[in-house]
Image (cartoon, rainbow, N blue to C red; front, side, top):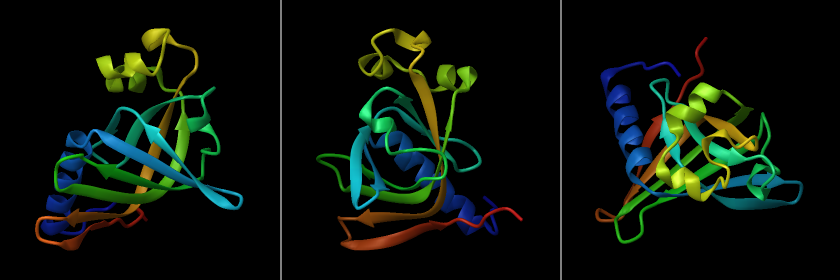
Length: 150
């Protein structure tokens, strides 16, 4: 993602804070006729603006998600006024270093064999758009329209 000006940099920083702070994330992927919605675990936004989460490749969350899927991530913090929607494209990978970077005690709930579980895969979402709903102010804010690097 290219950052064109300081306002975009501030928007990306705000989005990174929201991704880190909001604990509930749902991933929507269109599978043939209907969208499939699944809860996803630990997520993190890297310095390039990509969003990462751990996935069990034998679990239903991994399907129909595959490299090149168009996805919508919906973040919501129950009891708070934070709602974030991110649209993007997925890449499935298996970087052991990135698994270690993302691993938290919450991940133990998703993977019975722990950090070395052979069924762990990583999902990288390359965002194209993001919107934040400020429910206290009752309006939607276009956080980021991300441009692909040339």
